Amino acid sequence: MQHELAKSSYNEALLAQAGDLTAQKLQLAKRDCGRQDAMSDVPALSFWQDSWRRLRRNKAAMVSLIIILAFIILAILAPWIAPYSPTAQNPSYANLPPKIPGLEGLSWFNGYGANRAGNLVDRYAAAKVPAGTYYYLGTDALGRDLLSRILYGTRISLLIAFVAAAINLVFGVIYGLVSGWFGGKIDTLMQRILEILSGIPNLVIVILMLLVLQPGIVSIIITIALTSWISMSRVVRAQTIRIKQQEYVLAARVLGQSTLKIMFRHILPNMLGLIIVQVMFALPAAIFFEAFLSFIGIGIPAPAASLGTLINDGYKTFRFLPHLMWYPAGVISILMLAFNLLADGLRDAFDPKMKE
Image (cartoon, rainbow, N blue to C red):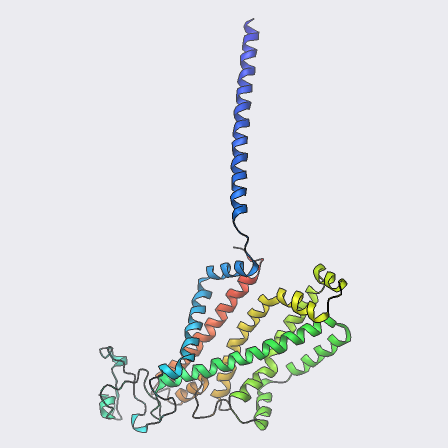
């Protein structure tokens, strides 16, 4: 009798324990269902929304974006915010040091500099500059305001870079789409043309263009555009060959959609992220190439200013007036670094395989 009571108590304990476990499982299941319902209420992000979310997490890319936008705004507003004309010459004010109101207590911004005897004097008073006249970054050898020339020089350099990148975008995308889509002999012929063009040095093309066109913005843009689209076309071609094998593209072809419609509606939108990254990398390359041409004397002609011409002018007096070179060199360095960091951030943001 006692054995049966003990067995019955044991069974009841087991049933109670099983009931507790079942209740806990039901509670956990309800909690998981609640979490799934809450997650289902959150709207799904599109590709561009998710890319923007990734980009915002990249602090270096966001800081670079802010810097680039600031330079673009300054370049656009250069005619209104530049204190002086960038081409106005006043030889009596040549090579004045920087002078900024409110910062005269700092030795670098008080307008003092060494005279021919090596003594530290007020260069503004020696040049009889009117009171209240300030050159925030100093003047060059012809008495032109360096700040105004940097603003206008940045304006010209950015203009050349963006126009060349736009031409690069149009020609490179169209060429790559056609080559990758048709394939076969057409693709082989188009790729051989690319190999011939890429084998010609850019400097040779520049010299040939200068024999036909006058040195200036147009000739530099054409020179950059003639060769910069080659890398873009190769990237677009490779992506086109990959995407055209996808099922949705094959379905569009079966449904009888035209080639142009398939290219610009199904293939091109699926490589926009990569194209944007390529354009962002092309911009600093164009800025550097323009600066190189202007530095060696075959770029922007005088009296117009670009970052390259300003560096060339400052290089001549670097030992005695280093700030004439440091300022434009600093601007071009910041621009190129910002564009490259932003391009890296965009590449990471557009790549869906990147780990969070």
